[in-house]
Image 1 (tube, protein in one colour):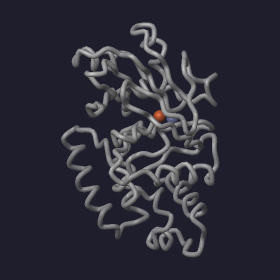
Image 2: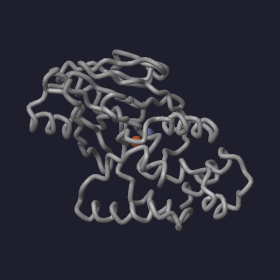
Image 3: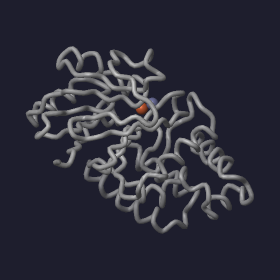
Image 4: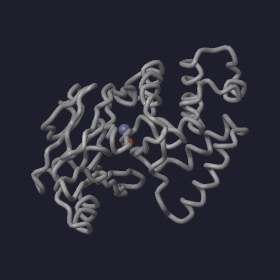
Length: 256
Ligand code: ZN
Ligand code: FE
């Protein structure tokens, strides 16, 4: 079995769609196409067919290209079953614990709600890659539009159980701004300072900061670091539980 190849496609201002493909299998999916044209150009440049569309959640900057791409390519749309009415053109609803077969590659479905009341990740376990939409960003997490802090903490905790070498492909290029906030709550984190130096260099070259890895996120993402003594000290929450530390971190980011 060949490795699944993954290419980011910049859409709108700072959204990433991703091509996921295996030429031997003759399959190519796109994750969270906000708009059709950049995806069509990326497919044409690589001479790939479009066979599947994967959606993590219903927001328009993740599903906006669904109907045009489906009509153009005849691709099948895979998305969260529990939010099917809000996923344009959905063909296949998937839920927690299921594995969707993309050619010879398996994508395990993880339900990770709170940014929206249903939101899924596609975890290609053997290919060591997870698509986290707007739940987990590089050094950040999504806003809580349709869920509360305990729900988001449990969603993030589910992702934290993935192996450290899992590559993390998120829905937006927010990394540098997220990192500035991360430094405000954990300025003494050496891994975080080193990562920000890398991120600033990569962004100065106009390149994407994706993917990261779960291991790096666990060391540098403040929303996964409710146990950090430094974050707890900065927030004045030394004795609080993890959910309350997470909730206060999220609240501070909202007004940062
Ligand atoms: Zn969203
Ligand atoms: Fe988004």
